[in-house]
Image (cartoon, rainbow, N blue to C red; front, side):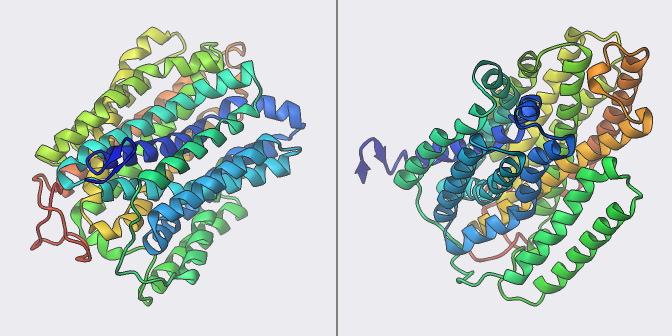
Length: 493
């Protein structure tokens, strides 16, 4: 047995998982850590509100638009190689964000961070999939999912602490040592893997068309409330995005090395898992965004105190995600996914019942159930998607799944924001606690939005029950393509 220091062939997979989870933690924290620092950034760099929005939007746009491309690049050129390049780019752009002299430099750095994240995130999941045998893959992906949930809620805690005690610049500097550790660990422990059937060709036209189309759609979703959903700009962006996606489909049907293998969607498990990824992210990110406003601007908590109040959700996700992954290995993914989505729907329904007099203690059951629903759903969902394709296709499959997650979260925030706009019109969150009737109007709008999320999540549970196959099957062999009715493979939940 090969030994390299403390790393042996027997435990290499666990060191690999640790390296990927470290990088994943950095990516997910960066999705939420900036929000609590925005007022300090605005004051320090003398920014307008429009520029400030792009500190968040620039990251989200480049991240969502390039996820599938990042997965494809890993499949072609090597997942470890693309992962390391992504980590280095992420660290370098974090450093330039920390020293930003103006908003233009900060926004450009955030866009570059998103590109680095898009290269890293699909690679983390495909590397984990390659490192673990099918019998242990659910447990490993459960740990991966738990770290993702922990990081999303830890971001406001860390951002609030660093902004209050050090500087808003520290929220970017902290990424540099984490990135160095992730690179060193991955170079020492991670085996290189790629899609051996893909060759070295890259569909450059498809990359450009998909990136432009997704950028147009995401930009419309982000700016729809601000510009008006019926405005010429939003209509043009949506129409252009849809036309671009149509052109992308036409291009992909004619190239021998497509970015997205649409044959994957012939698999019921892959198709169902991606639909569930959209739905669960819709409910999770949409609720997190507006509950954070509620806790800070209505109940009066500081950003750090509000982050602490999310711990009932965070801790339950971390506790249940690995367990759900093990259960999916044994009984398949369908039952845990259906149960998790139903629990999430109940949590959102409880939140829909709040009013202006609701105290935080009354929200704790909802926070706990929300964590339980997300924790039970995420790892079986991911396992179902990744086990539905051959191992050498893991990169593009991972990128596709993460794209659906990102788009679900973006649509969730946009849809809930649209409900707020229709119920409240323009409002200033900072005056919610003082303005007569503002708190009641806010909770009324929040209740309507949460009720919509509960209905959508319940529909997701019905879809999962109807589409996802219930029994674990044997894993597909490499290069065989997506799961088809006459094939068998391992742990295909």
